[in-house]
Length: 288
Ligand code: HBI
Ligand code: FE
Image 1 (cartoon, rainbow, N blue to C red):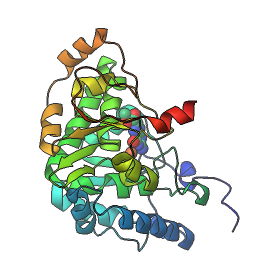
Image 2: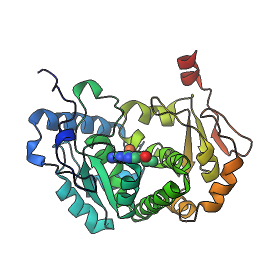
Image 3: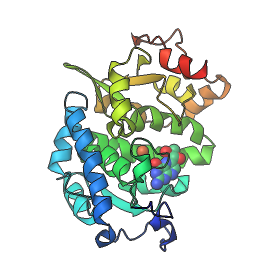
């Protein structure tokens, strides 16, 4: 079947002042549900032993399955009963301030569109699979839910202080690509890893990337790439340590950051607690 001409049919639907739209769940085609099923089944096979237990438990508790694209209203009812969070439909990326305002009010803006067949393995913009499969389940964990609300409040403040870049780095290195230490070994909790078949393996098993202990100030100085695997991953002890690290006023931290130079994505600095020192073969080959 020919690829739909417009990549994302939600771009044209009317949006409310808070940038949310109607999901219009009955409008999803059998092909779109089938694509969700293939994406879901592939990750569901891969993640046991790789994803943190909180994710695996929440995925089941929320009733996420390969049956098809979830109805956000049903999903939000279950989520709201657990931690007060809801998943609200958007057409794509929304302005930073609106994004943080939603998070600060325990609403997660999730793309209503699903990626095209040609984007099965990778896409730039968060679609319904990345957002709902990758981000939504951990919002059912009470401690992570508090962290995400605090992150939203921090985002609103960072915007006012002109510090979005530093806060976006924190999001990228935890919410998107974070690892967590467990008695059974390192596990994934970042949505960008949970929703990616290749990077979920690379982040835990490959000899290339560095794996470093979570360090808030260091993360806020560290550059990242949006178009390829990460060259280093940060490891938290548990969600409570992450929440505590972020449940503070960042203004003094931003003041210290003012003079500090950025750190390259593939660097190790003397204050790092190194869990694994990567050989960077993946990124070196790419840039060679
Ligand atoms: N909008 N829908 C959506 N999803 C995001 O993840 C998102 C966004 N707008 C801004 C944004 N993320 C980033 O600027 C923050 O993660 C820093
Ligand atoms: Fe995301």
